[in-house]
Amino acid sequence: MKRIILASGSPRRKELLEQCGVRPEIIASDINEYVSYKNTPEETAMSLSFQKAIDVASKAGDGIVIGADTLVVLEDEILGKPLNDKEAFSMLLKLSGKKHRVITGFSIIDLAGPTKIVEYESTDVYFRELSEIEISDYISTGESDDKAGAYGIQGKGALLVEKIEGCYFNVMGLPISRLNSSLKLFFNLNLL
Image 1 (spheres, rainbow, N blue to C red):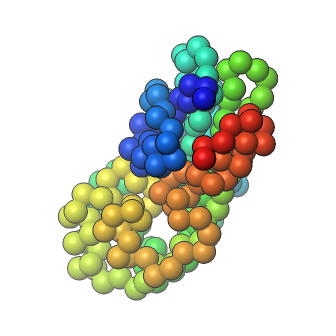
Image 2: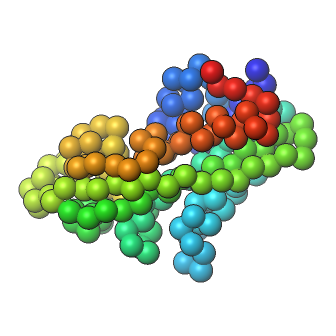
């Protein structure tokens, strides 16, 4: 198999690839993750994933670079990573009792050829009604730190979620089945 480079420092994305038997090389991108409110959330997620992939591709030499960016969207508002506990509290309070979308843009660049793929996956997530005490207790776990929308579904954040419609792994940060389909179709690679 070709060298796979993950343009992300996310331990969750690395773990998902490793579950499929891929040991990616990690080269985290250091782009400024600027969100333009002129674009749709889908366009924003794809653009950020492509910027990360291009940034790492310029440093990588050979192989296949995978970039990804995950956004939490409530109605038309993008909820990024909270800067502090107060902002995390505000985000989780907004999500309480509501449906939101988790959108992950992903990009694949083959450094040996001209092929570049930019796609996205969207999953609907329904939060149950949360009390202010539950929100504070969740924030005290530290899971809100560095996560879009101030929660992680793979940990205690699962207790906040009533149900999802779509890809669970997308909510973790990498729609692994969709990624594999793109790798098979365009790059003749199969993670199986």
